[in-house]
Length: 313
Image 1 (cartoon, helix red, strand yellow):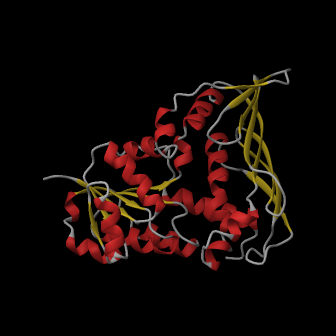
Image 2: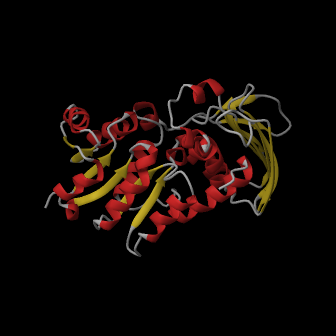
Image 3: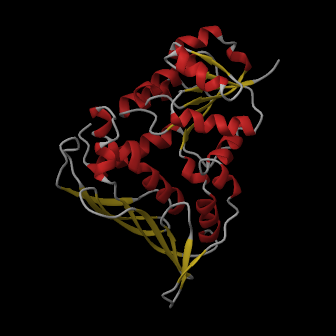
């Protein structure tokens, strides 16, 4: 019996996964809502496409599926994930954020059985820069962390995403930074959050300031969606300060010095494919993706984001 990978989603993210799976020589099926679009994308990589969304699972022997990757439109993530679980697919990778709200995430959790292996696809956890930094700070004492998840307003304006997505932009997009930070320094034991201003599609705030503590040390953040800035993570240790800005690159400033030096990375995969993706997919194929968050972890992250961004639900 030939085991297969299935991908839900025939958009740009689905294609990024296809590039990796073709390189790994994994037989793959693409499932989209529109048959022509899904089959056109799949056939360009030598694979087969199906239309009809989750209904396409009725045409597939799900016992032959070794991994399901849910990379569909955000509004379809919960439906497609639950359909895979109900069909008995045991190994599932869901694109972040997994769902718009707590109801979506808890509904997915209710359908998971003990033997199911389900993870949220925060590919930045597999960046060479992040893996290198995680290894380095494990040998040092963390003194503190500063991070910034500033979003460019023009990118949000031009995204074309539905209003319910824009209202949760912090959870749907900025968690690339927030998840990475707390993956590196541990989960907050205390956090004090403030938000100011508003955008017409994000009424709960446009400037976000906060501070808190994890078991490993204190942290603070500052982000202005209506102003300048970029994603940035800085972690100070007893040896110096590490900086990820952009997150694909790692710099280090030695203690008592002012000079930032680039850290050499073994990032061949990150140069060839969307960064972090190949390592993440390989780990999921082997059910060894313990770097990634579970659905329970994602529920905790959503509750944290409620405080950071001031969500009402």
